[in-house]
Every structure is written in structure tokens, then in C-alpha cells.
Amino acid sequence: MSAGKSHVADGLHLRPRPPETVMRLARMGSAHPTRLSFLRVLLRRMEREGWRFDRPIWEINDCGVGRATYRAIGPERIYSLVAFAHDLPEEMRSDRVIATAWDATFALFDGTPTKADLDRLEANVPLQEAGRIRPSELSLSRANRSVRLWEHVVDKLSMGCQPDPEEIAAVGYLMRTTAVYGSGKFGAADRRDIAARPELAAPFQIEMLSVWLTRQFSVDMVEHLASVKGGAGAVRLAPEIKRGLGVGNATGLGMAPFLVRHPMLLNNWISAREEALARVRRIDGATREAAACLRAAHAEACRNAANWRSEHPIQIAKLADLRADLAKIATRLERFPGDDPRPWDALWVWGEETLSLEGQEQLFALLIEPHGNLVDELAACMSADEAVAFRLDGAMRLRRLREVLGERYAWALAVDFTRPENTARFWYVSEEKLEPRLGERATETGAEREQPLCIARLASELDAALAERDETETVAAFLLRHPEHRYMVRRVQIAAGHPYAEVHDNLIAADMLPIDLMRCKLAFFGASHFDPRSDKWVRISLFQGAPYPLEMDGRTQA
Image (spheres, helix red, strand yellow):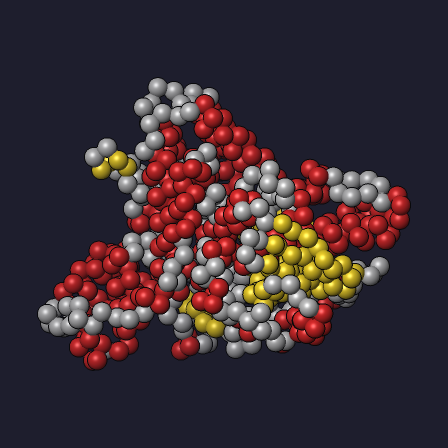
């Protein structure tokens, strides 16, 4: 199933794929983690810089209740995960954002906490939103046990046995986070206060570090409880089983609007990704080492696909496509690199013509994997100073504004918003939890509180308003008369220099799938094993296959 070729020659070079190919929801909802994903950026830096990790405090009792700290010790700074383990009644365990109690709660502390810090955090962190934290805390998070697997692992280890590999593969994690808050939420340090630190410059490094240390905590907890239960006969997790465990995450609609609200950031993420592919496609020939790395990455992708489970009809079909496509890729790799002068480009063009979207995006990850020396530097381009785009260019003439609108938003201007299916839904913020929600316009109330996430409709409305104005008029003069278009004018001006700033689909259409937005963002995090539970929430796994903090020895590869 080809979704349009991107084999666009520019002299002897190949350009990144155009936004009309890349920025469609169906493709974004087929994204896979790559070596540019944020968790791998974090792991590579910490390995390269020789970060050390320890567990200074372990005050967990025989019932699995108490507190612990884990430190990440870098060349200049220390970060500490402060973890609180709770005795959670089964009836209170919930992954929903409205939950008020969890199996474990966490804060990432800037430095090494004192006893007074720990006591303050213990009084607040377990309350999550109802508590208070300070700028000395960089993130606030919580997690629940995967009860069936948790109990299975504890029981087996306590009896001196290893857990069943099939049970491990079926779930893939001992705990799943239900929220990881940073960037100023609930009193935590604001992003601008820490963004200049080299180790935090890439997006979401705080959140990735918090989750990675949480993974260590989850394994330490089951081994502790197994030891309590089994005494001297208990054993630790075997390294190969332990490595296969990640941290789960249950993510709902709260994440979906992020990409829409941060157009410059989205552009920079996608731009880095597409430049990486273009660089690889330009390579002449293929070294023996690169070809071997490609085949190893393919073998790992096959293992991942074999262990990837889902009960959702959409994902079941996509998994079938992926497994079939990986078999096709295996056959194609039998003659790689062959006689093609540019074998990487030839492999990509073959994939576009042969594979489903799911397979194409997996092939994307495989192609850039052997080329860290060529693409890893692009991670430094994935942040954005969004404040620079806040100020409008009031001197711009409407002629130019409309030109940009026509160039960058042709996909939006083609939508007929008089048809009910194209305005079927609306985004709003829930009063109870201040979280994004998606309503049905025909059957639910609240459309008067609609959030400005309907970019296609806003672009259409702006185009209609501009058609009635003198094209020599300035943006400033236009907005004095039509301030309701200020938000969309700013987006158009941003899009003028950021081609990947917009999702090229109508986000209020009846057939829009919010999980496509979530999967795109989560793939950039480095998530795997996407398992939609509806079109509005998904479970995933993070750090499966990665080293653990307390075993980092400079030899692991990210």
C-alpha cells in the first residue's frame, strides 16, 4: 500500500519527504521508535559522559511500603528519583486520571534530597495534584502494578524459579505510569529554568530519566518482596528476563493535543527525522558493518513484532501488516546491498512501493539504525524556543499571508465544512481534571467551550475573511478589525518557515483517530508495543531491552 513516493531528486541529492506525505494522521499513527527517540538520546548521553547511578536510601518494609531514592550522578549535576511505595487496596487501583491513590508515587529531585526534603515530599507527592511541590522538583509521577504479572514474578522468584517467559512477553512491564508531569505543573521547575543544561536540552529528558529510574525501582521492589516471601531460597531476576521488562504507560486524550499546541516543536521533531532519512538515502554503497547492523536491527524488529500483543481491531490489523512486511523486508535483505549505487535509497523506494504504512515506518527506523555517526547529531535540533514565534509580524501584507495560507494549508482549504461529518467532534477541557476531552457535536453539550484545535476549520475561516480584505492591507490592520483570527494568523506565520508544523488532517472529523496523534508523540519518546484500548487511549511500554541504571558500565549500547 503505497502512500505516495518521496523519491524527489535535487541534483545529485535527495530531499526530505514533503509534509503532504509525512504529516497525515494515518502515517503518524504508524510511527515506530528510532535512534532519535528521546529515551535513546538520554541513554547515549549518559553512557558517553560516564554517568553513575546508586540507591542511597531503601526504606521499604516487608509489606512493600516505604520510600527509596535513586541518584543519577553526572559530570556537573545530580538528579534523584524519590519513590514512595504504598499499600493500595485493590478497589482503589485505577489507570484513569481521576484516580486518587496509586501503588507508587515519585518526584525527580534536583540534587540529593535531605531528610527534611524527603519528609516534605512524603507529605505531598503521594497526593499528586492535591499536594504541593517546589521548583527543586523537576517532575511528579505515579504508577500502578501490573497485578497479574507482579504476583507471578514475586511468587516464582520467592520459590527460587524464574518467571514464565510467556507471561513476561504477554505484559512486558511490572509497573505502568499513569502520569508523568513536568515543565512547571503543580509547582515543579519550569522548562525555561533548566533548558540550558546540556543534559536536559533535548525534549523530555526529565520525564525519560524519571521513567528509567522508575523501571529500576519496579524490579527492585519485586526482588525485595520475593526475598521477604521466600527468604534464603529466593532468587533475583535472570538478566535476559529482566532486560525484557519495560515500564508501561496508560495514556489518554490528555496527550493528544500536545502536537497541535506546539507547532514549532512538532516541526523540529519531524524535520530532524526526515533529514535523517534523507542523509541515509544519499549514501553511496554500504559497508559490511552497516549491512550487518541493518540485519541485526531487522532481527530485533521481528522479535519485537512477535511479542507485540493487542486486542484492539485496528492494531490487530496493523500488527498483521507489520509482520507480513517484516517478512518481505527479510526477503529483500537477502540481496542487500546488491549492485545499486545507492542501496539505502533503493531499499527505501522499494519499501514505499511495496509495504503498508506500518511497514514503511518500521523500515524508516531500520534504515537509520546503522548510521548513528551520520544522524545522531540531529537530536540537538529537536528542541524549540517557542517564545520567539509569539510576536506577530504586523507589517506583513495580507497578500503574503494569503500566499502562505494557500501554500501550507491547501489540505485544510480543501475540506468542506458545511458537511456534518467534517465538524462532527469538538475538543474541550474537562472541568474536573482540566484535561483535554473530545465531544460529539450532535449529541453532547459543551461545544460553546470548544478549544482551538480545529486547525483546518480555523484556516478555512481565516481564508474566507482574507478574501474580503484589500491584499495590500497589513496584518496589524486586519487583526484590529478581526481579532478572532489572531491565533490562526500566528500559526500561518509560524508555518511559513516550518513546513512540518501542522498535522495535515481535519482534527474534528467524524473518522479522526486521536490515537494516531498519541502514537506519533509516544514513538518520539521511544515507546513500543502500542496497544490501543479504544480510539482515545493506549497502553505502551518504555525502555524494554534497555540497560538498567544500576548496571550501566559504559559497555551498553543505546
